[in-house]
Image (cartoon, rainbow, N blue to C red; front, side, top):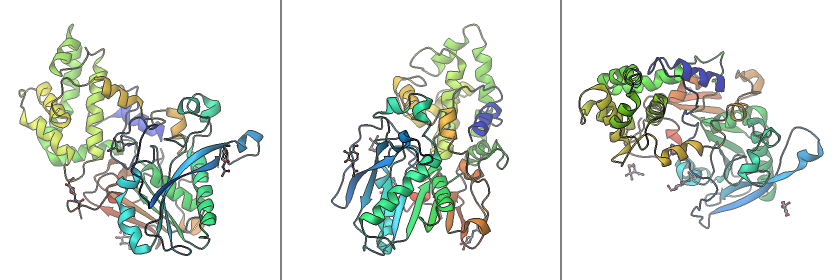
Length: 422
Ligand SMILES: *[C@@H]1O[C@H](CO)[C@@H](O)[C@H](O)[C@H]1NC(C)=O
Ligand SMILES: *[C@@H]1O[C@H](CO)[C@@H](O)[C@H](O)[C@H]1NC(C)=O
Ligand SMILES: *[C@@H]1O[C@H](CO)[C@@H](O)[C@H](O)[C@H]1NC(C)=O
Ligand SMILES: *[C@@H]1O[C@H](CO)[C@@H](O)[C@H](O)[C@H]1NC(C)=O
């Protein structure tokens, strides 16, 4: 996965011919659509129906060394409101690469549907995020290979199965069918859990899960081709402007006082130290809005509206700047503010080349129904760039693909809204 994403950045065919990215700033595979800040200090409204628990989770599920039996507290939340008890179903939302806190409100799909199934809703936080951290603190957990070695999807899925079994026992729900649900990377976890532990989960819903994102299956430039399509469908002139802007920025940057010209034109918070800083910032806006181009606001429309309106002048740099201002709003300065730098460094685990991508290693690349059984729904929005690696065709009667033409990343898991696409 990382290799292919890294390739995207060095290829970056559509938007840039000259971007030599060193930093991985793809939007995370996160269903929330919101940037996550410091994960350790969040309070969440807990109602009588929604309760927080901690499970003493086994550090290492895959060998018998004494230190494998070390435990860490893993957080999970249960909403009891709709549950009919005993044989009624259990919906388990599998946390992805973020703290679990806001999932109880963001993943409206569960609250909206659990009632008609009399289901229990469980939300489990992913290891190495939020409060579910081994070795005592995030700093320790992310310290080096000796602690990060347990940070991978195979362990995460095994963690989830332990908690599911624990809950079934605790609430005498031995016969309750379990459906696992996840979005994006979490959707990959949901489908892998169903495939690997079919005796624990009866079915899975994998929303916007790029489960075919392996080098030899999905073309590397696919993500960008959909981002580009989203812009192009919105406005051809906007698309052309962005396409031409990269070489323009390079050209200006190569002038003797080029960086100070760019710093002034983009009203940067500090003088730019290299043109990459600017290009990286612009790129991160474009791919972010491209991934979350959802109603009601359709952020691609906002950016393109700003570019096409030419509020600050009609040359390329001015129109691009207009797009930034339209999207970010009126700020004292842009590009390299302290807040922007902080939000980039706060995404635990995601930019790390090795650890996060071991997520994708070690899992079966092909979905073979005869071998694995079934009951997985893959749902995708076709305007989500990650749908390039989603399952878009029915594989069997019970490995089912659904898609919405205008849907964005994980939109189907959010609260239903009258502005939702068909
Ligand atoms: C949860 O939502 C609140 C309110 O929108 C926000 O301030 C907070 O940063 C969010 N926390 C996470 C972990 O996303
Ligand atoms: C979980 O671990 C903590 C710390 O080791 C211990 O105090 C607690 O009793 C354990 N809880 C359970 C339910 O085993
Ligand atoms: C897959 O089959 C289901 C019915 O089982 C159908 O609703 C859905 O449209 C099919 N998906 C595709 C992509 O044809
Ligand atoms: C739909 O989204 C709009 C815009 O965010 C919001 O104002 C409205 O309350 C939402 N409707 C529902 C039913 O949640």
